[in-house]
Length: 190
Length: 305
Image 1: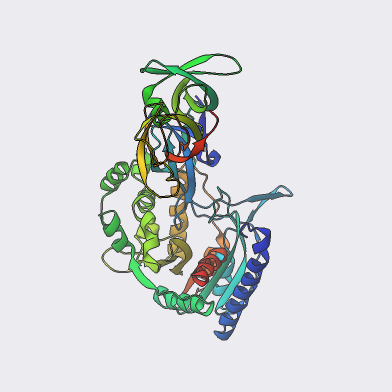
Image 2: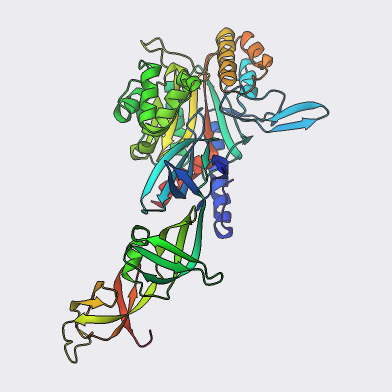
């Protein structure tokens, strides 16, 4: 079991708190008056993204979380598990839907995803920042209207609905920012 | 010194020079003598939570001072009058944006002052250095009751421990009986995260377990005549109405060593020169130490606002 002492704390260090893997996002030392030192840390839960604050006695040790972040290619899903492949070793890994989370909205196959692995199990998947996806259904476009600011919903090939400008038509390819879920532009390439 | 980008380093040094010049003008005006005392000392600090850098030389250990307190008190006992010193001090331990292993301390002593009069002196100095703060005074008890819901003077160790555990910190059996530690824990867990909202204030009337080398009052809690100046969440100064009775000071050192042993540290040899100085007849006085980089930091912020 690897442990880290508070003196080894740095941003990005992966530690285990109450059985969950966390990453350190802030590390402060509090040392009041003539008193002992404490480390006050902010940590992000790698499974659900929630940030919590924790105070530790300086010098205390905390268990390391065996966490890696690697690039894997998304292959397909069977609606229970999502399958990814390491493109150098061709080894395949499956991730439960809960770990894929919001990334599932943007994945159709072949994308290289940033996957967080904890004890050999994928616990979080981040889709590429931009996805190119086809519109499978939207209300007919208003001819010539390329400037007005109105929007309408469009259903994408992955089953996700996004707000798009009025001129978008079924069959168009769209560039979507997966971090915000917003339409960026029309795209010519897939 | 704070780590600075190259662009801001020059302006930082200019501000530092201006601050030092203001401090010297202030003390010159008030007839407080500037002194310089040794940086390398024969005795380590006895304070349980502060660690010296040790220098080995010719089979002897010497210690980089963690504060000029003992040298300055020996001078005060020699009847030199009011004195101040600005100089480097060294503390071993983890560094952070507001904790450096080497920093500059301004420490001064005023004869015939108590902690209340010294608080006024600190306010005047900070004003003179360009601070424009509205200073308040808040007792340790007021902050504790407000943010932890307990009386820091009278709540039992068992109840303090339970409160700490509720905050999510684990305690071992020794720690549960270490009142100084329990109060510090609750301060860090419950009080400290909220102090930024209080602006500039003097924290006063410390529980007697956190007295360090301050005199105790004869109020019902025997609270310590110690204060801290906290500005925008940063602890800038720490002062005492000083213990001048050699027997009481010896007792403080012995308590420090008991605390050290309880915490698994080694006891330190007691500075006999310090006790001897008090025995010669130490004049009643109050003294305070200011972290100069921190003072500059809060003054800069004030200027930038």
